[in-house]
Image (cartoon, rainbow, N blue to C red; front, side):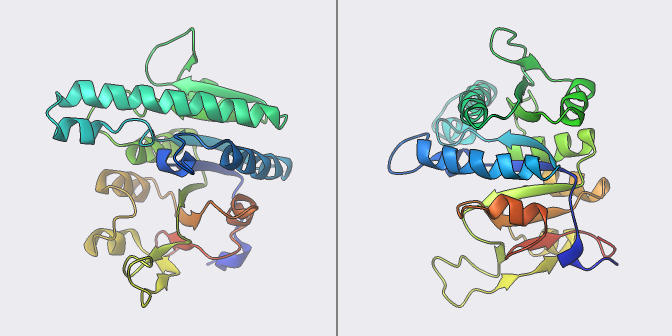
Length: 243
């Protein structure tokens, strides 16, 4: 088994929540977007191929709409459109740093973005372009975590990078419980059996079936993404025994 400190990831799928884009009451914070774009530029300069799946919870969450009486399919479709807004904002921020970026949508909207196909996505990555996957899987009842796992499998990603507010998976909420301990490494089965809430169970199952490791890290420190793709710095690694 290769020591974790020496693992390098050549093609990654970055899962970014919509909430991560929020700061100071703004749905999309320009300062964070710039920081992320600079970090991504450095990662791409290091030769890493990067795809991104972004959520839409900073704008609209389908499950929350459903809980308030909306029809679930329609609510989820609204959530998919929210991810498109975030994807376009990310594209703009990334392009300002000189990156070549393509947004691909699971919902057909040719005036706004390319329609997703696995072949075209892989071709973009091989040409050094950043690909942002929007609109989830294009289907209701599936989270963007599941979309991230699905796209990671389709493009042959060597790791799914789960960007969060904290630097890994803890035994309890570290904000509420100062005694919580970060878990450096977990198996897929441990995430499942301990109900740790890293990603939904469908997403975890897809990663397990396709042997895609998950690296959970904090996105909010400058340079965090570059450290993550080098498997440096604090994080939690989720994978099989031979991961």
